[in-house]
Length: 349
Image 1 (cartoon, rainbow, N blue to C red):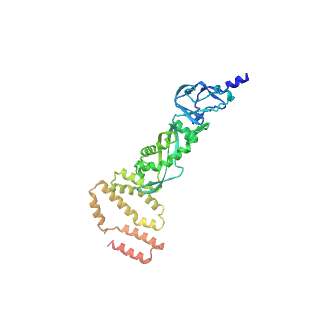
Image 2: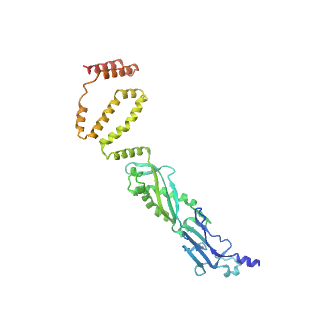
Image 3: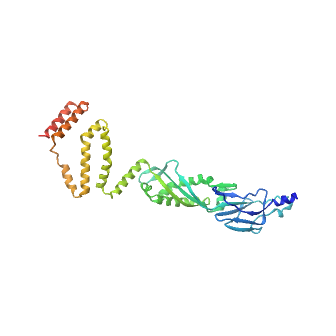
């Protein structure tokens, strides 16, 4: 009776695998001290592939379906043909199941800025991140190249390898995309398509099919980001230089005002109080006039070239007070103050 129980335990009648949803890519059917019975049933579900390995070599690959296993369909010898071997067959077969469904929302990113060569800026550094999805495309190749004889192989085990392939091919993808470096952030779809084209043959070398990849963010260096911001500003005004100067001037006014309100920092603040604000106002007024009336450019040029001969007494007194403060602080000498005072008084004549 014990012998019959032993014999019954040596044969497998049904071979199948139900995924547990834990990110398993490859799973080996438990075959310890057992053999597949002639005529056993193999069930391979949708999104699965079964690989038979006999004496260390892949014997066959089965797609979705139900199969009856016989000595004609598999190179497997059961114990029934090896009574003289005391139930220890020298022919061992292992069955590996592989999940072929998509593994979605896999993350990739640059842990450190990577150096990219650009025809306009030379060597630059950037950060980028996104996600991708993949599936096992060639189970036999994946078995021989990656998972091997391990009883369990998961997405987490493969994650580092695939991330490394993405990072390794980013530079080539940018070069082949034809997208200027400054436009990468605004053309993430084109960047992703170029990256996908670059990565698909690299993934295929290990039996993986890249289904999709996205680029969710590209971070440029600070100095290049400023250039990009200026380019965006030009785009907002249609490339018109006059309007762009108006845009730049309008952006600068709050900074000048803030500096003036905070005292401007000694000499710089006094200089701001004396003339910088007036000059800035003149530039803004001229640009606004040209923007509203393109024919006013010539008039503005003539007006700018004409000498200013009239000045009010109040303006002279205000300026003299400023000069007096500078002399008190030791910034102007008595001779410099007197010379400037004489020059201002002449304008009242």
